[in-house]
Length: 364
Image (tube, rainbow, N blue to C red; front, side, top):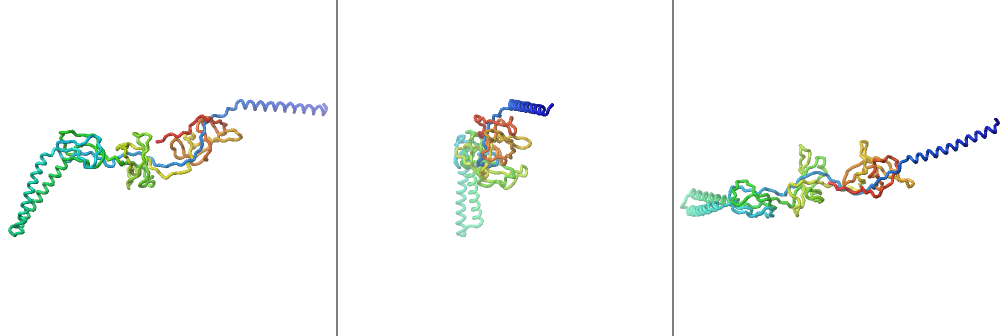
């Protein structure tokens, strides 16, 4: 076989090999395209920068500024009732009058004895001045006068106690006595609560003691008034730490002109701290939590194609459906907040703008 024929055979082999190679590559690419999954559909949210109001959380109980059960010091029969349940009264208002007819009769007798003692004292004083009477007679008359005056004052005080009055201004509770009822000493007549202002007592761990100060702003929520926020200030901080609970007791004062806050109510308390600015936040649904750390899928665009990058982040506080990002993201970046289950690093995505998950969720 000549060299020329051999060269032609080799050339033909190379030509057919190139043709088969190109065909194989085209078939491989077509097969790969047929098996490549379509881009994942996701919803995205933007990393926002905002100001946050830090706070310390606790629970507390509402306490009246002054609150007592009005009762009687001495026994007696109820002769008159001068109040209605739930009535607003001023300090000194007569609430219940016990029968005092016998005491008034005794008072008249004691007043007569006092007048007699006064006459005897005046007579003895004159006799001593005229040197016609002894000093001992004068001293006895003086003692009798003082004793008669003391007995008269004691009976007047006893009479005054049978007129049961409001010790301070406030709102009365439900009446617990009836006309003609005999009351023993200490028997409860009704409750009396001073509601404006009103206190909220709560406690915080000892580690937070340095963050507290008098007149510091406090806000509370109560179950009876959903959606309402009440504002007050710290009025007292206990100077000691409870050794059993390792907590500090705090009392806050709230204006309560409409009597919406009542003693005994349960309150969710927030002690407000100085404002923090420039906080980066993302929706809570954008965070993927696992044992290796928190992560997000960041949407990136290259040559008009969207893909995701799996990125570790450091998270902070969670508030109103959003999570603080301390590191790992920048303001304005887009993160996936729906559809993360089907994602992995580098996967192409398309954004479904009709899904709106970036909405605040009301916190406590």
